[in-house]
Image (cartoon, rainbow, N blue to C red; front, side, top):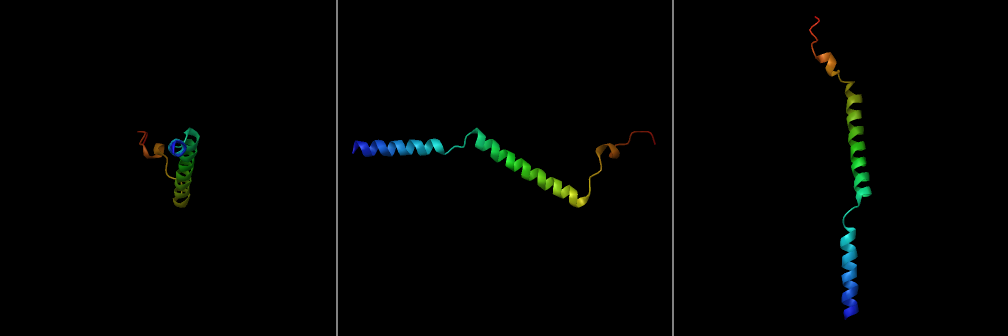
Length: 63
């Protein structure tokens, strides 16, 4: 009975430790999400033409 309890405790402990991703897994997931978002933004820009630069929108007072 004690062996079964110990084995169950060991399995539950290992399962609990495995549930949280480590730094590398979180970094990879965040990098993938950023790359996907950047690709989406690039596709939107390519579909509408390049946006005007902010410098062209600012009146420099020379006119």
